[in-house]
Image 1 (spheres, helix red, strand yellow):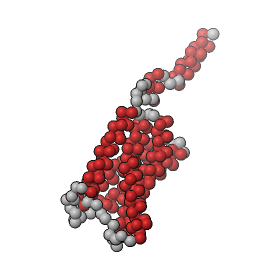
Image 2 (cartoon, helix red, strand yellow):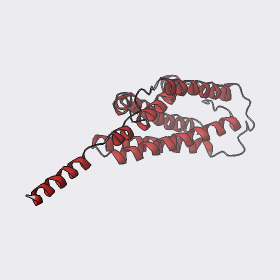
Image 3 (cartoon, rainbow, N blue to C red):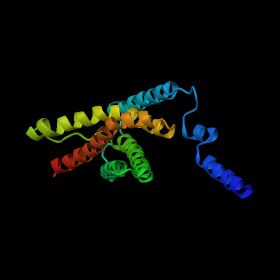
Image 4 (cartoon, helix red, strand yellow):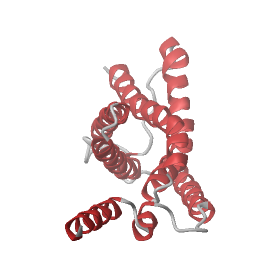
Length: 208
């Protein structure tokens, strides 16, 4: 009888160990009463400042090396980083569809790193060389290049805060909200990354 009670106690102990404790639940969920309003508002504010800075850099700031004598590899590096970000995004989408959460998280962080490096390289390129204009205003310019460029610029300004908010929701373990927003973040981020490569390829082709 004593042995039976001992086994029952051991079984209850194992079940208790498998059940989430209050401490574990607190680690896996946002803090009670915590609000995402202030962090999201801060992300939007920072994004607006960043976009205004980029527009000033591109359209107002005089280029220090307008003749493009130095660091001429930067535009091609920008396209490469955009392409790598797109590949990482597609990998992340595949992993989440197959429920491989750790691989998905690693892929999305990789895409974020590539896009961040692109932004640094993009700022350096425009600070040095300014904006590169399409050499001729022909049918390709009006029918293809200009629409792609405009959509790329507009959607990239929208993508910046959305990408940051999506990451914030994941890191703060607001997974339901993260999944809802990620449905829009993924195609938006992927389009911006791919069209960044397309714009560069069209520019190179036009100068040949």
